[in-house]
Amino acid sequence: MQSDDISIFKQNMSALEQLILQAKRVPLSAMCMVDKDKMSHLLEALTKGMPTVFVECQGVIANQKSIVDEAEARAGQIKQTATNQASKLLNDAQAQAQKTVAAANQQAQETVNKAGQQANAMLQEAQERAQNMVQDAERRAAQLVSQQEITARANMEAEELKQSTKEEIERLYHDVYQHIDEVLAQLDRTISEKLTDIRMTRQQIDQSIR
Image 1 (cartoon, rainbow, N blue to C red):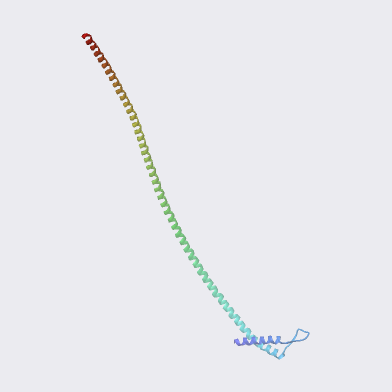
Image 2: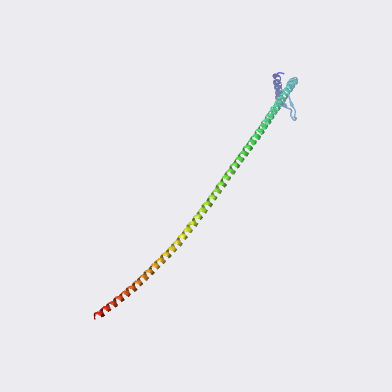
């Protein structure tokens, strides 16, 4: 059916509507008066054109249904394709994520192992250094104690030697002074005796001269 038939059908429907709207009302009733010939002509034209319009509408509806069915089918295909692609992308992403996680776990484990080895090496080195420092400190402390002991012993021996030397010197001085005193006393006795002898000799001489 041509699109003109539908246009004519629409024009006849519009004319019928105008005829009804423009009809004169019958007083004291809900009825109206219309031109019978015009009404009959429009009804006849509508009656003739109606099957054609219906057929055309059915064709349009069928065509629309076919289009809708095709669109739904294509939409289903697109949806299925998108679903498949999404599933593939998801599977690929999950596989990649698992690989990434596995690689990250392996790298993390290697890092932890390496860090543990480094920490153990550093700890061992620190322990060795600490032990060396302790041993060195102990040696130095022992040397210092030994030196202090030697110094203290030397000081003590020096003090003892000093004291004994002082005592010896004092003893020598005492002996010297005592010896000097004894010599002086002996000398004094000798001189006294000599003086006495000299006096006696003089007296004897004096007596002999008189």
